[in-house]
Amino acid sequence: MPRLAHALLQGLKDHGAREIFGIPGDFVLPFYKVIEESGILPHFTLSHEPAVGFAADAAARYHLGLGVAVITYGAGAFNIVNATAGAYAERSPVVVISGAPGAGERASGFMLHHQARSVDSQLAVFREITCDQAVLDNPATAPAEMARVLRSARERSLPVYIEFPRDLVGAEVAPVPVLPRRESDKEALAECAAEILERLSAARSPAVVVDVEVRRYGAEEGVADFARRLGLPVVTTFMGRGLLEKSPDVLTGTYMGAAGHVDVTRLVDESDALLLLGVILSDTNFALSQRKLDPRRTIHAFDRSVKIGHHVYPNLALNDLVNELAARTKPIAAGGRPRPRINTGFPKGLKADGTKIVPSDIATAINDLFDRHGKMPMTSDIGDCLFTAMEIENTALAAPGYYAGMGFGVPGGIGVAAATGQRPLILVGDGAFQMTGWELGNCGRYGLDPIVVLFNNASWEMLRAFQPESKFNDLSDWNFAAIAPSLGGHGERVTTRAELAAALERAAQRRGQFSLVEVMMERGAISDTLSRFVSGFKAVRAKQTRA
Ligand code: TPW
Ligand code: MG
Image (cartoon, rainbow, N blue to C red; front, top):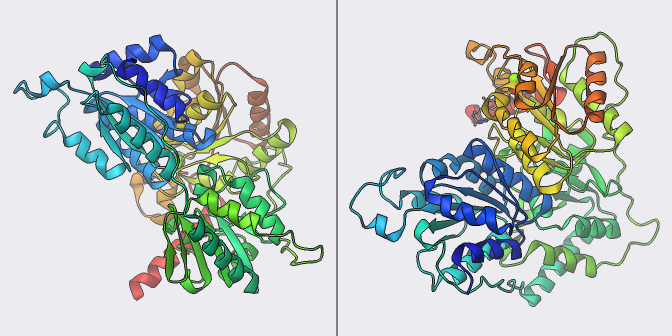
């Protein structure tokens, strides 16, 4: 019989986990020993638990398996709450495994170190931000509990919580089974797909909007295939930017309402049959719409249910729906419905001169870099860097576009590099870099060499854009490029377009250590996309206050 720790690790692997991120502590030291010595999954330690959570989240977003974060009880677990909440909001299947006191300690009558209020306060907190939980305090039931929780994570693409008492690491248990996936009801699926196709074919201007669940469930190719067959235009949400990277022929652009390209906005706002696939109906995605999402003209597939008009089909997996739609669709005859051609081109050909840099120049320089060296997978933090990313060619991107928690970019990029072996491009502002930029110091140990583009405006500029009168948004200049060598990387600071282009090219050539390109910009110099977003938001708010 395997031991509980081994069974858990093998169970994780069998459910699609590919690596572990973590920080040990005494409540999890025995499990950590097994992680290291068994070699069942590679593991990466970072410096602060928020980063562990972000890395596991970004890894899952990229390889579509499970992200795994292993932390200690209390101090470690409470430190990862925010990252777990973000993963929940953005539907990323992160398995949070926390060490915990053993049965004897729980009954000792002492308050235990790292304990907040009661021994179970931590479980109560994680109940709120995970979709399923297991406390492995009974070796007889632990395998079934683990199997259920890991299936939940996969099926719902949401974080789960496993609490592992440290005295049971060596307990003998049965292996963790992989439970069969719950099938969608065949009749409901057929009826639902037929109804959707009927609505789409009766519509004058149908369109498809895709968001993160389409990626989480690996349905990108299926959606592209279906859209191609019907000649339907597809747009991503703000949050879903980077989706359908490999199908530019069906993708029309990114919908940002008043902040986006007028033709893309019109396509969505004026559509009379809008198929929303895996879409989070959030303010960042839809607050700037010119027209409310009217249930009579929307079909919404999300969280394993499909809402059409005023009725709901429960328990339909997104992949099943997409496959069923494609299977029932004959390719339209040539000369069928023409897909609207919208040119939402992105800037290219940076004039490498002595002009000061503005955010859109960074997008241009990166587009040029991708032209020369091929696209790189990206992560972005929240800040103007994410709005600038909308001006970069549609490229795989993981970013907190909806939850908007700062600190994701750098550790997220480290997670992507560790999990996929690819070299990522990380976009981050100076404020966010102050939170988690240090984590770059861990790249050297693991041979990771991301390129980091740091938007340094010595400012919390996004906040300033909303509230220009406040002086607290002024940050000081920390000279981040100078810190890079002591973290094992290479740093350079650029202030002109010519320096920016040259520094990016050098970074692309330099392998084996991280490259930090610190781009100095004036306070107040924001991207066009952010500027439109802020004025759109202010207008919505003013309207709400008046109402
Ligand atoms: C964990 C609130 C949103 S954007 C922002 C703050 C403080 C400023 C970001 O500054 P940065 O980028 O990184 O220099 P830029 O382009 O605006 O200059 N705490 C957390 N998350 C959020 N979102 C905030 C505070 C915030
Ligand atoms: Mg800033």
